[in-house]
Length: 425
Image (cartoon, rainbow, N blue to C red; front, side):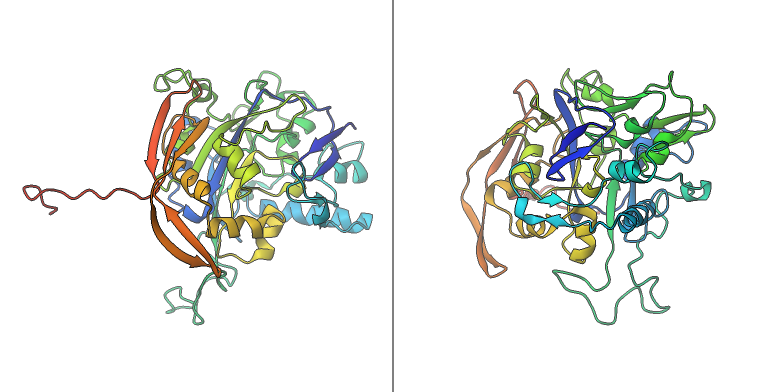
């Protein structure tokens, strides 16, 4: 198999197809610390794309509770066990080498096997990627074990409270919400596994789509996708998946005014946890060094947003700001070795980061560039033993053609109603 460069692993890896990259890459950042699991995003997607016969068990967007939840059930635990078994059989220790950290290896170098390399070692004739087919009952609920921490269900009469209490930075009893949709990976496992070549990445935005006229429902994509975001529809006998609301990305939606617009799940989020964008890609496949692109800034410059299970090797384009209160070993398994730095930067955000965080869910129009107008210092504190200050800066977001679409201050303005209109019920 050809060698391709995976910047999230900090090394080259094997993949069934040679490198071929889009002009722009659809990408997004989720701030786990803000999510309230209202499932508004899930229902926005469901009511737009998967409301028909045969799609009852399809949730292209879902929010699941970790560490126990998952859709399909325990999808990540099952694949991690398969990958662990492959490493044990090969006598390989899947560790991260921090010494290799750099611009194109921001999290160090991964010394273990990806799902592609594990399949090439174990079943080279039959599998392109290590995976499994979930049983039917595993698709029955999109968020089983909702709001259950690692200690299991609370004792009767405890009101769900832990006797020992909890305090930051880490809670003894914890859970958090993980927001998921197709990561539109740079090296999709679904694409690699499809024997019909029915899956492809769009050259204009990197969105991964299934050509349903070519699909024959072999479910190889369902088996191979480590995130289980390719789903089989029994009524049509073909597979379907998230399409990144591509008419909105194209500016074809009547509300878009001809410029890229956020997907339905992003635009519906009331918790302001989501930021979506399009990142320019250089011809060699690396992200163009565009600091003023908010996604690029959060992922490559500030390193506060991390990929989900980078060790799988698909180079996902969905990124997460990790939760502050969960145990670090669990988070490192999920998001890689950049967790400690990401949480430290989020706990004491830089002046620029604090301003960019205001852009989350600020506009349905995709923000391609931001500028910051500096304001006065409004607050001083000490975080982790170091001085920290907050400034009331103004962040301005611009669309693809350079028009201003949003202008927000770090400190939210307070509006007091006049005497003739007092607040009342």
